[in-house]
Length: 323
Image (cartoon, rainbow, N blue to C red; front, side):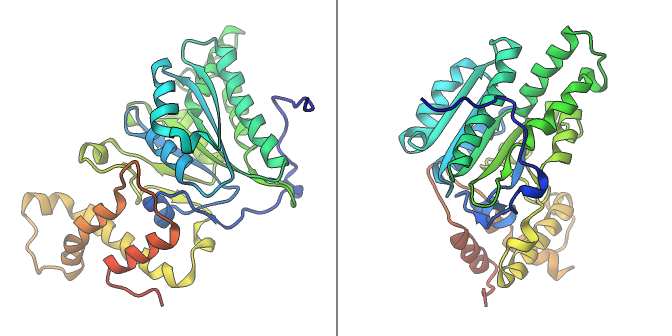
């Protein structure tokens, strides 16, 4: 028998924690290259319903370079749980994963408890010296459960009906992920946030964005075009990225971002046929590279790609050298 652990333990003191570690290979080309995640970093995945959050999480669980995955499914649809475990995770993902589930029909206390338990299991592996990938789908359902508890005990509803304790409990939960004390492992956190009506400024999304070390934005428009995972790399940010990308790769990433931004700005004119080829060499190059960049950002469910492969593919695509 192991020793008991507190479900609501405080994170390590700020002065005792190690720093974020080296880049962590997630196996997803778009993330490895443009939204690089480091060991012990905490990222949010912001997406509307049905845009492919669960599939992205399962791809990461199967392909990541961490030692163990702890996955919390908070307030999920009951029928999706077996599908996620059997089809999305599969035997190879499940072999190094712990899955904590509280479906949407469970009581609010059970749903909140499942989020705390997910973090507690991740802390157990971290203290055993493992590098843990902790994924929670979704923080929004945890916030909704906390809102319901708050309203039932007479708390005043504030923004969008959320009660004040929601915004005090969110940092307490999310801060438990991150680097451990020197000599122990780390918890890299990926927390999904359901943006209702694709509104990225709703209260939970705003609060979570302020706590975490970066955000991955998934967009319905990209999914509708048929590109999966539907990540908008121009709107996604990793706060640890500038110091963890090798120097020779930085010009390649800058040029790729600049071309995607140029295409995005001119997209309407290009589609309407109002842009004349030859008017601007930068726009011409953005149009020329667009389809290949889109193919690069897309990835099928069974594919895996390392960080080094992603960098060399992108450099080849832009006809640049990684000197």
